[in-house]
Length: 320
Image (cartoon, rainbow, N blue to C red):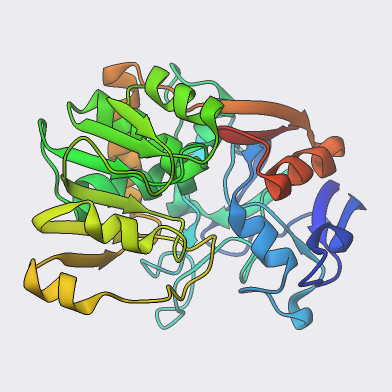
């Protein structure tokens, strides 16, 4: 079957390790199933995998891709939950949590094998491309907002780095849930787009907000960490799920954290139950993932290039 896969690890030039071509058909052990992929979306995790983060040389070649929507063996339209081992379903009871491509072959292929437990019905209201955007970036944003930050309608939230998958999802989901959303970006066009999607205001990265906020959605890391802490109300919460600009800010500003009694919460992906709730939320509120562009699987290199350059707003989707 045709697939996009990591053939080599290259920390400095990750796209040099990306190959497109034939790979073996997936095998489905007991309590696993094979899904025919219709659409799969890119995440920064795929670029980091090509750099060797979470993926070692001994695991190559590895088909990339965490997210997908497709059709199962019985002809049902489905969405995949990307976390394997979190529940023990379909794997050994002591197997640690991982996501597709860290231990098992991923979704940038014509077919993928996953535990039966990881398959959810795709709502008919969502296209395959839209549904394929949800299991990583949108699920991460959903968990950050409603589980980790615990915000409620009327609360205020700052989303750092408008344009990225998680950030875009947080803006759309937060606005749909009645939150007051503020966003930042270095790019004027992305700031304007954030406001079109429901942000009350979008400012340049590091700029003063109209008000302090109840929570910050942080995926940028070192470059925005100080601004995130300074933007919080006393007792506010910063939820961090990534650090695309680096994991080590120049100053932790612990005095600000303890004096203002700020909360710092880490968040990674989400549960199958949260994904089911996210699907229901999208249907009930008419929310649809923001898709920057779609690319045929055999043009996957174009999509990877856009992500590497940061030349996108919303999700990049591969279609099969």
